[in-house]
Image 1 (tube, rainbow, N blue to C red):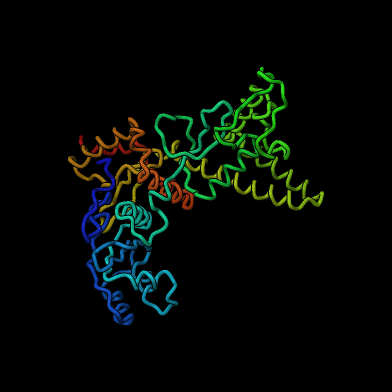
Image 2: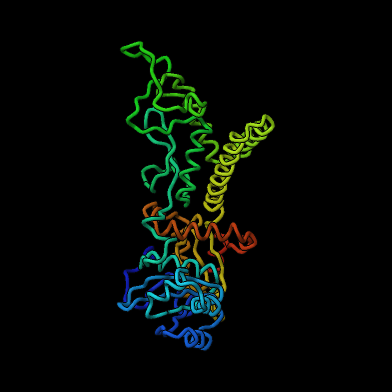
Length: 395
């Protein structure tokens, strides 16, 4: 089991993978794209099976420009060679492509992981989702300032337990953080704003003016204008932490919902709409954090999956993070290797690995898959049970 999930970029082939060759994936041939859509549809029907897999389009220079996945490769690839407007993305991809390659994958989840693996390695120009640089998962953390504020930050190992996440959301996450600060009356101004808590002595007794309108609108406690004590602001931080830990989620969301209904009954429809959006954003944030907490608590396990042919697979998970995929051990030698892998997972993996953007992107794929397919959680095997199985093979 290697912690290097994404080997160096290779040439026109898809290259190595965390999925084992044979039982986890099987290479398909490289096809030249014909000018005739009729010819291409015939080639696809004859050469590509209707099974899970990934596919890639290459330009004339051999550069991978787009990667996709499908539960049925035949049906998905046929859709690229049907009559459609020239500005549709499938038509634009085909017009820029000279070659097509596919790979058969053992199941939909593994196809999702393989697709992300290829996007991370090759950075195809026509793939928008899954790009590590533009879609790096973020963590939620409080700043280390005098009056802390909540921010979305890139993974930093030295923050340790103060991080909540990972969360992938982009604009959605930024909006949720704004609503979070407003809900808990936390400031969101920059570090250049001076903080003066109530009861703190100042050289001059002139009244302080807040740097924005949030104090007047009741969405900030005003630590920049000496309107709140240090102890009261610390209590706000603690209340915010309780929400991020999932301890007061229903209570906070319930209060927002009641305020929304009250505003609607008073015909304050704009305020009610704002509270509705705030409720939706905080609900989304709470769900994502709950998903991660469940993964850390329950997904330190082996996820058995069907392989290609008769060989089953083991997907190693550490708190939901993908550690590796191997063929399920059937021999003494394979069981000994699996025991080493399982002990490594049980001991805990280094944060330098768990905080890597490529690992976080795969982790979020697994967490989303298990959220959308809750019946799959029953298949998970604990590390101890997997070790017992391996020790029985070794004995």
